[in-house]
Each structure stands twice: as C-alpha cells, then as structure tokens.
Image 1 (cartoon, rainbow, N blue to C red):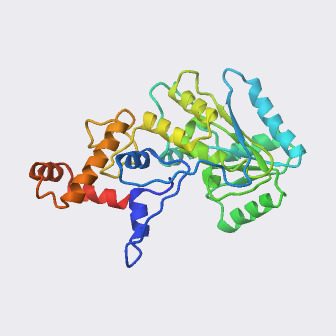
Image 2 (image 1 turned 30 degrees about the vertical axis):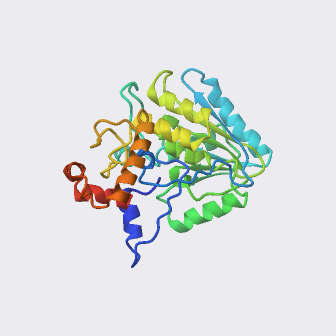
Image 3 (image 1 turned 90 degrees about the vertical axis):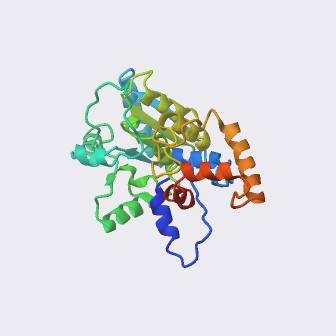
Length: 321
C-alpha cells in the first residue's frame, strides 16, 4: 500500500519486456480493493499468520473519558521491559513543523464530526516527557526519517540487540522492522493515523513467542468517525475486513484514474460494497463477450459506449495498477 499507481508502473517499465506483476499487501487501500472487486486483479488470499507469530490484542485508550488509562499504559510498558521485553511508542510527527506534518498526511482525512484539535504530539517532546516522567530510568531512543542513515541503522541494530528498551518513533517503523522481542506498542494520537497505517504498525509486535499488546491513545470523542475507525481496528486483525471499512469511510477513488481514495470517480452508478455481486456478474459477462468477439465488431453499440466512457489514458491506469 506504500506505492502509488505511477510508482508501480515506473518500476515495472524498467524491464525490457513487461514482467508479470505480483502485488503483496496486508492492507489494500480503497482503490486496490475496488480494482480487485471490479475484476482487474486476480487475488490469492493468505488468511493465516506467518509461522512464529503470536496474537495481538488491541485496545483503545480514550484519555479524555478515562485519563487514568494513560498512566496504566506507561505502566504496561514498564511491566514488559521488566519481563525482559521491549516496546515501541509511535508519534504522528517528528518536531514542531505542523505544516510539514499536514503535507505528509496521505492516509487519513479529518472528518467533519471531529471537534477542533490541538497540534499533534511531536516525537522530540514526547521523548523528553517520557524520559523525565513515566518511563524514567528505561533506555529510550528516537527513530525517524530525518536522522542520518548510519544513525538510523545503529539505532535499529541496538534495538534488535536488546540494548534499547523503548523505541520512540514515527511511522518510519511501519514496514521492514522485525524485532521478535518487542511485544507492546503505544500509538499516540492514534486518530491521526489511517486504518492501513495502524494495521501495519501493530504488525511490528507479536513477531515472537510472546503475545503483542497494541494501545491506541486518542482524544477522539465517542461517536465520531475517528473513534469508530479506532474501535474497528481494535475489534479485528483481519486486514480484509479493515480494507472494506476503509472503503466505506474513504470511498474507493477513481478506478480509471490516479485517485487512491475519495469520491472522485467516473463510475457514477455502482457502489463497490452495495453492488459487489452485480460487479462480479458483469465481469463474467464481459469476459465471455471479449473471448468471443475481441474487437467488439459484433457489438457496435457496446464498443461505442466503451470508447465514449473510457479514454486511452484512463484505460492505461488499469494496466498500470
């Protein structure tokens, strides 16, 4: 889910001959879900956890309604560290540059039902607060995208070796991080992350013999879309179910264009979720017609409609994706 349409096409076009394309994801974004249902991607579904993984429990920590739960959250980290394990604390941004943070938001839209919010928590401030307060005495270290590559590598090596108790990080740990001894993750301002991000992030724990614990800290009120999103993530670890919820909340984007989510679509009459059976039947019928009449010479009206509705550049997106 980290690559867009144009990025995938650029990678594929590097070969002299167009290669077969295998796309792997635990959290398909809305447009990918839409193209799967519309029939332009064949799918293989892996429903079991990889070998050696342990279950992950996820809990929403509503600090506005239950402020005492935040203290318990930090206690939970101390308990895991005392037991010889490690933890992640995830922050939504690195520093004080709010404009830069907002420019990087690609996976979540602030819903209309959210009341005015404070600025998102910054990693630098959080690290100081934890080191001087609830996690004083533990070995903490920061990790984010602005650090020099050698410093990031050193930090990850030290964390993997068990020389760091708590890694305070941004979403730079979302993919490619595998530390089996890390068992607890606290996501601060969790309502500022999208469903796919949260699901990917919690996949960093529960990678060893011990079960994982993911705590989603939020000030989002009960009944808001943001809170419902967090409750849904806490209720299931099924990436496909979460992908469907993502479609419900963000819509599927434009299957014939580059929009990865949202209502900007040239498909006016169909709803991905409501009309899934109709879409499947239409796919089968279309495949039969094309197999019997590849250039649609015997279906002139249909050919005219296809030409009128799908421009060449729009059809290209189906191939690129």
